[in-house]
Image (cartoon, rainbow, N blue to C red; front, top):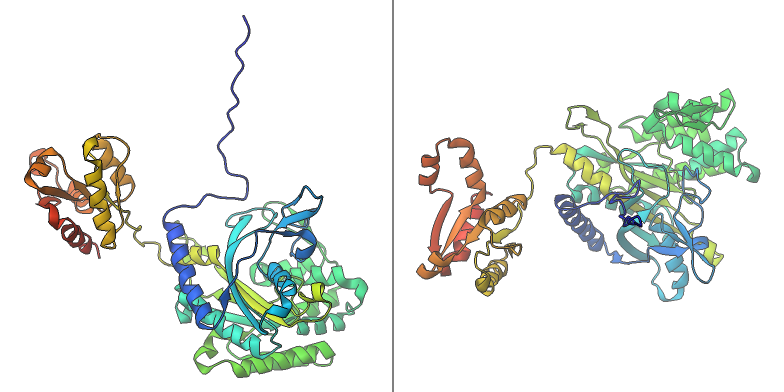
Amino acid sequence: MAKKQKTFKPKARVPRGFRDRAGDELVAEREMLARISAVYEAHGFDPLETPAFEYTDALGKFLPDVDRPNAGVFSLQDDDEQWMSLRYDLTAPLARYVAENFDALPKPFRRYQVGPVWRNEKPGPGRFRQFTQCDADTVGAPAPHADAEMCVLFAEVIEAAGVLREDFVIRVSNRKIVDGLFEKLGLADEGDVQTRLNVMRSMDKFDRLGEAGVRLLLGPGRKDESGDFTEGVKLSDDNIDAVIAFLTSTVDGDDKATLDNLNAIVSETKSGKAGVEELVEISRQIPEVYNHAVAIDCSIIRGLEYYTGPVFEADLTFEAKDKKGRPVQLGSVGGGGRYDGLVKRFKGVEVPAVGISVGVSRLLAALELKKPAAAEAAGPVVVLALEKDQMASYQEMAAELRNAGLRAEVYLGGSNFAKQLKYADKRRAPVAVIQGEDERGRGEVTIKDLVRGAELSKQIKDNTEWREEQKAQFAVAREDLVEAVKKVLARRK
């Protein structure tokens, strides 16, 4: 007898480094993005949407921490043998769009964009291969005026997202002062490009790894907690000391002292002098109301290679703890900077540009940590469907509730009463609407306050007492359905 061939069943699993998202998280993200987008639009930025895929040569190779042969991006070859890649940020596609439509666009061109980006990097706790960015950019405006505006815009955006003004700071530095540092270190030659990139990537980890960790990355190398080893830059001890002196030249709360320290370190170089002057001018142009929220900080490097001038980073400063009560390091929830050479790749001429990018997922996670006891969002009102031939009537009830601005749905999974209530409970429905044959004959509906019912179930121990308890369930005339549900929902506010 022939052996029965097994039917292949794929294993239901999400790819490594990706995740499913649903419910409250998506609602919270949507609401936060709406607030951020409103700030962008209030400042005169228009929305733009670019494709998920770009030709690989248009994206360029600018990703930090590239340790993979395909430069950290997901790529495929089209049927015309051209390579395409999923975008790794929203800035490189913007540069392509501006170059392609340059003559038709107003200059400066101000746009904002919200969308997912993908990076083919090693995933880790809280680090995914797909995440959402929310950017605003000005193309065609030189430093430092547009940079100062970006600092203010960044502060307004983080505040609109739900962070108190005293709980964050926009840190500002300048790639030109880093160039000045490289001149002092003897790393300014064209042949030292990769060394400079490795040094910058090491410096960019200063806030996370501290001085000891960065010294290892600049020197022999560093092994992380997982055992993975990162090859070091192998700078001399004197050069490592110079980099650390640069990174620690910031004086908290005193931009003037920080700028004086920078001046002493890099002003003898052309790039360093220009970078300090730009930072001085940005500092002068910040409105007094945001003075406390914008600070000069030399440890801000930004890992992307395409930055050419001022760079920004939004850091959360409040303390937070995870569900086990352990302190959590929040750190950066967004960044940005000036990239005057990105459009030049397409046009052959330099086009000034500056922008910011909000790390939406990280910001949402931080806000969730700040409010660990926040109540879950309520689900929709559920109209139970006890009789198949009355489905049109049930749908009419749900439509009346929706027309009144309430979330409502009809149960469509069968007529079993217990299963319908169980469904409403899983949906976190605050109210169930019930109309069986008896209620319909009386011209009534029964309103069941599911939240109140859950509270009472914890208090009542006797079945007789439960049957006699009427606070969580009552009947009203059919025409009073909407007002009765509104009154129940009002108790929850």
